[in-house]
Image 1 (spheres, helix red, strand yellow):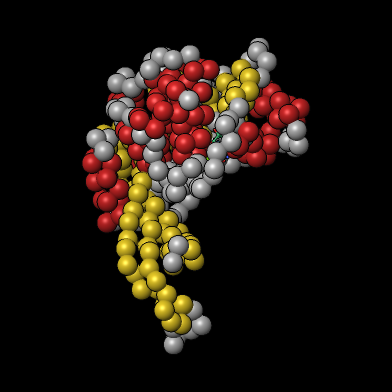
Image 2 (cartoon, rainbow, N blue to C red):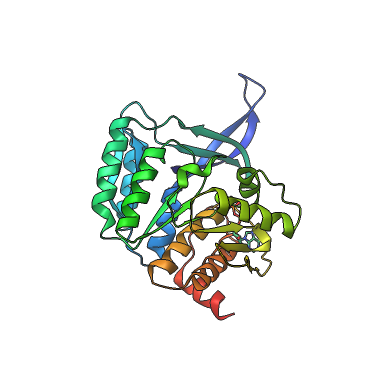
Length: 301
Ligand SMILES: Nc1ncnc2c1ncn2[C@@H]1O[C@H](COP(=O)(O)OP(=O)(O)OP(=O)(O)O)[C@@H](O)[C@H]1O
Ligand SMILES: [Mg+2]
């Protein structure tokens, strides 16, 4: 996914229609979606390989080049003809976002692309510690691909984490851990969350119905709750932050949790790392990555 930003100033109304005319002064792009998770990981020195689908278009090339720039292995990035690279363009006039333009399809990727991804991820599996599935519901994380990943990862004893999308979590069966936010957990569990009891009930319901080992529900400014079979739910609080932009907090959580677990840390430590990193990222504008220095300082505090 490519995040684009177009900045400019507005000095007049168009003679063609009652709309402002933006005079563009600057354009920028960054990696979004799974690319943002990869960026977060690369920023802290992890070696990362990305599997996914782009279009056969200039944006797909841009995305690939940016990943290569960060040292990310793109051997499992597939370009599909007749499919656009997912692109979100924000138009910002004098510090105010006035429009977002989405170019994307959420249709499932082709059977041929799925086959290629199944094959390439299988080849990459032995070289990694953790598989992170950053599902944005754009048609890449198909049931078939997830089932193949879950099975092969289990055989190879690798940890698998998914940031889930949609209402039906049965496609995540066999994974180690999923990280829905509170609202997503409520919808997927079919349990209303009004208070802590509701949250615990929803978490338990998900663990009972979805075949995953563990569950981490993120709760915005209230931190996170970790659920494991046979243990009481475990809460992790946050230090309330001055929030500038919550977008990307979920990517940071999934990425930092993966990093901690890849380093062999116990779950509580990896979760604390993710919680701290997400607290930093919400204080930044856009989907910025956390640096090593910022993270060290926050952990010391
Ligand atoms: N106001 C806040 N203060 C401190 N930390 C925060 C705040 N908001 C979010 N966080 C941190 O970010 C984590 C994820 O936030 P949240 O539960 O909103 O995720 P999300 O809704 O999945 O985000 P995204 O929109 O990126 O998908 C929280 O668990 C917490 O660690
Ligand atoms: Mg999220």
